[in-house]
Image (cartoon, helix red, strand yellow):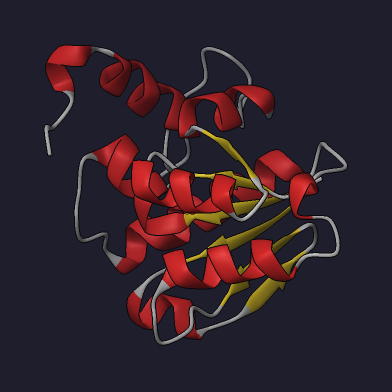
Length: 151
């Protein structure tokens, strides 16, 4: 089951930033690649803007270029064009993208659920290396309703 990851949305939902930095993007790529190494899962990570213009492959993780319509349109198009759209799982907290993916026959998964499926990057109790995202810490922070931003 391939996962299609809405990169900017993952960073935004965890960090609360609407404009992720290049460091944020690199840290997310490293974090996800590390988590996927211990599984048989594959994932495609999509970023809006210039970060999406540098396709790369890191084992079971690939970073895809977004089309002119942006990452959301590219993700929906990839679900629609899949041989089996029902096998595609899009990871995002964006409700509109979730709606579009379901209408195209795909499935969705929230960021918290995705990160829980693939466990911790480092052993419990150890701190994340410099420059790495501590997703569990972000997830705990944003699971608290008081810390969520409202649309």
